Amino acid sequence: MPRVLLEVCVDSPAGLKAAVEGGADRIELCSSLAVGGLTPSPGFIAFAAKCARPSRAMIRPRVGDYIYSEDEIDVMRRDIDAVRAAGLAGVVIGASLPSWHLDEKTIARLAEHAAGLELTLNRTVDMAPDPLAAVDMALSLGFRSILTSGGSLKAPDGVETIAAMVRRAGDRLEILAGSGLNPDNARRLIEQTGVKAVHGSFSAPWPAIDEKLVRFGYIAPDARETSLAAVRRMKAVLSELG
Image 1 (cartoon, rainbow, N blue to C red):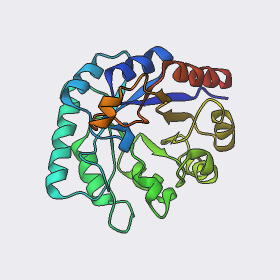
Image 2: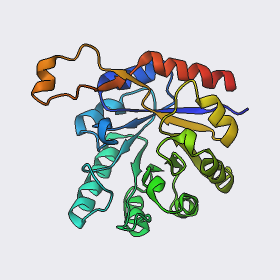
Image 3: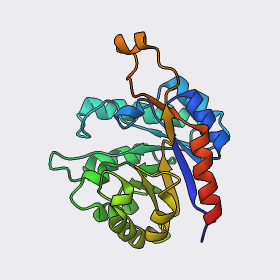
Image 4: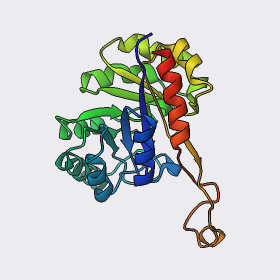
């Protein structure tokens, strides 16, 4: 079986270091993973640019839906500029229409603005009526990857769609399976779908959360952080497959 790439999403310098030390091949750089990931700060982008692994930064200016106003698109374009200026490898983008179909016009505008950077289509595809159609769109716009759980909340429940996307993409586009993957279920998903890349936060509960921080709303009681041990375990599983 070909080597399977491991992408780890992180939202802090400590998480980034844990991902790299644990064996991540690529980083998805975010803030606020608890809400699905938002655009990382300029400081974090600059920090990641010195990292020993390629990073693609999430470009998502706020929580909530992926239906963007012109002002928000302007912010996203400026964030793409910051990623390019810092020297990161790429960006992770996506946009939806009110019908949950992919907003191809907005995605194309963002992709054009990000010319020269590696492009990942984010999980807006999983809320769309036809995730398979995203493969053709992504190819036409020059994307390198699609992050997907196969239209399900968790990737292990979307194996049929993920496998169909892999067949549709062939060697032209990376189908990056993510959401709900761990060292215990990754092998089966890879064997069932044929994906050559997997994605996750591989986190553990935040150690010793101060109750006062929770009470003041500065941290959620169930906060999590990228775990060096979890990343290492996943890397070991993928190395056995390779």
